[in-house]
Image 1: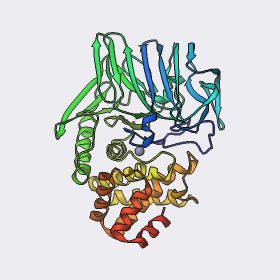
Image 2: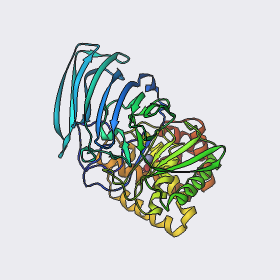
Image 3: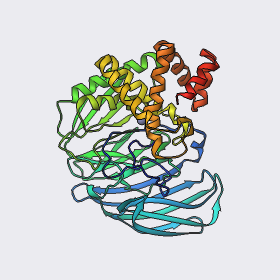
Image 4: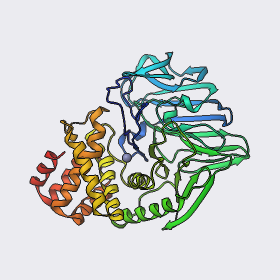
Length: 448
Ligand SMILES: [Zn+2]
């Protein structure tokens, strides 16, 4: 459930949540959005939406309810919504007042196409309290109006993710469940995380595979190409592209190889369905941020546009999240998802592409890590160092640890960590201590 990768060098205090990306940032984002396993899961917010979308015009109209369950004492709820959408009706089950502001600024970044919904509660909500929001909104979504994440609207390829803000997103409390009734023109096909069903021509029903982090996401097309392959254990890999691409075979082979490599020492992951769906529109399609990649619902991987080897490196990271998506975002515990996923991806990349490739990657991570004064142990929220620490310092330490204790010993630690469903960095230190002593833990802490 993890937050973003590339993010501006600015403290964006208005967006205390996650996954905010800004214009001009073009590196791959590695966002893991699997099933949440933390204790807050019981307080997941529930979205029940009915949406009609015309990919040709971008016309979207939505009605539904959002059942907010407070995770902590809450006096105000701030949601973000695409600025092209007009709220026609909204009501609350508690006394509340809403103000909207169109065209907001985040840090120094103007977001001219984004609106903020500020819902002030007459009485604060206590943890576990509910607020039902019933609402209707509509407007015309355009690809240009997506300011924070991937997103594109067109008949050949439509891809709507949380950060396109096609529904109100509360970044402070990202754990959600959803059901979505989706109407599209009848010739369209849809794919989403978990299960999704064609109810009748043009009518689809999608629901979240358990609790997901923020994302109500899907892709649709009137003519895409799907390539499928058995990847072992009764699993299917499927690549969705706009017009087919020569890369499809390599991507499926890459999926097969990396899945087998991780499964070899971690065991099978708990997937939402028997298919791993890879969403890769191909070079002729231009989402707002084509270099972003993420996993949603533990079976839906949105792949970036790049050179094949870079894409496979991204894939290796995202597939690792099928095992590693624990540890609260914006805390040192995120090491368990992002640092481990990145370490495993680079290690597998070394197996595929050789020691020289791996050395280059390790040098790059080490150099980036050395530029940061703070420690991974001090990550507190979505600061500018967070990402560099998780994607560079963390894996650099793991490779150095591998140099000291050997790859097999790392595998044993990761296997134990995974099978315990550990979700804190202290769990990692506990296992390291039991196997290699406290001095090794001190060393690891110093190198984070
Ligand atoms: Zn990641």
